Image 1 (cartoon, rainbow, N blue to C red):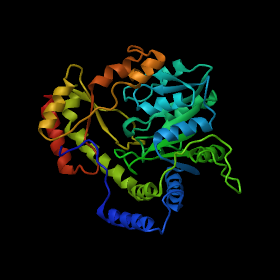
Image 2 (cartoon, rainbow, N blue to C red):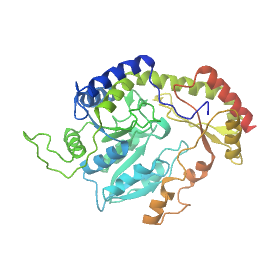
Image 3 (cartoon, one colour):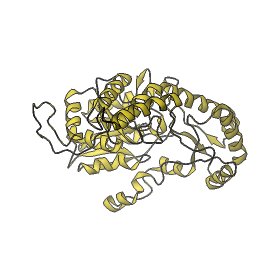
Image 4 (cartoon, helix red, strand yellow):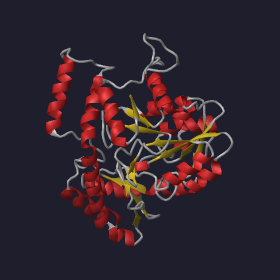
Length: 376
């Protein structure tokens, strides 16, 4: 497919420098793991996000599990999760022994603040707010304050949202902790990998321990004071992450430029009511991991995709089924369709147009024109 939905991007000048650094490690002049590159990546990512602490992990899934453990989330606790999200936003809570409580979404496919209020119980220990598709939740500060009054943790699932911000505050700097993904399709990538951000020194220290098998990070000799796992990021990933982070604002700016072209070119369809875009205030900088379009009820999404494929354009629609309908959760909790009307009404009619550094301005105009033809 000529126009893919996602594409990792490394400028040639970065590739040359990355390969030199890789070569030195392979020649024995550096460490393969537990070396300076990951430490520097953590320091730089913390500074970029605007928090004092960042802890690298081998995935966002690991980051979420470790964060829950570090905050003491476990058996008997409930963790509220939106139904439109990746599997591990909820499975990580299950992995530490907690009970996932599923929540409907709003018109942007983000956690519904109103449904959240209904779902809170005396057992609620944490809420996972997913910045879906790269859109930082416009109500994140109100949600934070609401949860703080009730002594409930706010965990930002920022897997899609590297570089997103609201009112000048970056994703991952608002909640009790943020968890990022650097999977190959994400806004910035290390192939696979993740990062934890937090303002809490004690939590950061415990996260670092749990990622390193439970090692006592302050002990003068090797000893283990926690039961952790091997969730470390390698030095190769650290190198990739450092180069990607330097380009992150450039990456996000390009994605926003493509998004503006799509919005302008498809505005007539929006006015006709044939499609709708997520709505958010100007104080939000969207990271645009995905460019979401909601189709009018009755439009055949599969036919739209087939027509786009004929023009060598890929489109997709993460995530389907909604997370509560994944077989694992149906088996564990007997979850069914019905209780989440807003998410369930939208999941079958959203599509995502290609948006990444491999999409030029001309390509964006071409894709928009073909999409218009595909829905008429």
